[in-house]
Length: 158
Image (cartoon, rainbow, N blue to C red):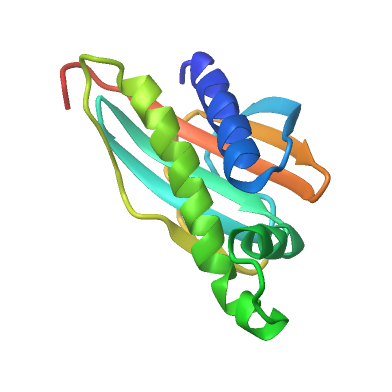
């Protein structure tokens, strides 16, 4: 797992959260682990294939997800907003990963993303790839965003 992947995802997350949500993210920590298993109760999983392959798993607290939905879909009643949280956090994760994948691909590689899958709860059993992972924790006034980047580089154009 290349360490520069972390910088690509940090730049993408900071840019997307600022531009789309007006939320400022700052880096809290960067750690290595053996799998992209998330630590917070709302998780968004995207698969990546092509020149690099693996998974990117975002996680956050439910209240952070609700805040994101509120900013993305203003003027909704709280009962309506709760139904839109998964869609909102999935879309934001898709934007961050999409921007990062463009930078990772450069001009000579191809990278494909799976649609985001959103999981909520603290007692879920999901099997994640066993792949060296970089875990980013980014802070905002609304909460913590964790990004687990478990990618392996492949040769060729994918």
